[in-house]
Image (cartoon, rainbow, N blue to C red; front, side, top):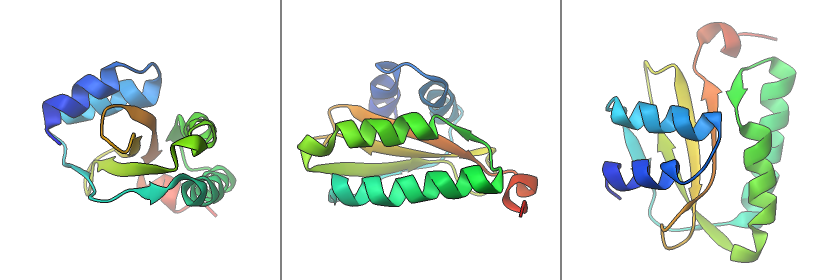
Length: 121
């Protein structure tokens, strides 16, 4: 997937995570959409657990609860593509979930990369 295509797809959605992710892409941050789709039911289980972990650790997030809700609503799709934006040295790491044909972003959230957030008990 091309950077400009992903920016347009993110622009079709409302929310701080989507806007912040678009800004990160426009700023040239690394991104990848992985080959192959993952079962939505497994994604729901995994990301519910990860959301709970970040909340209990006090790690800042953008749109994580809403993203999990959107994953639950997308279970009839069966599978989703997974993408990410960011990497070492970025303030936020963005996780994206796209329709199996890559035609739309189903969910997006961000997790702070701040070392102070990561070191909280």
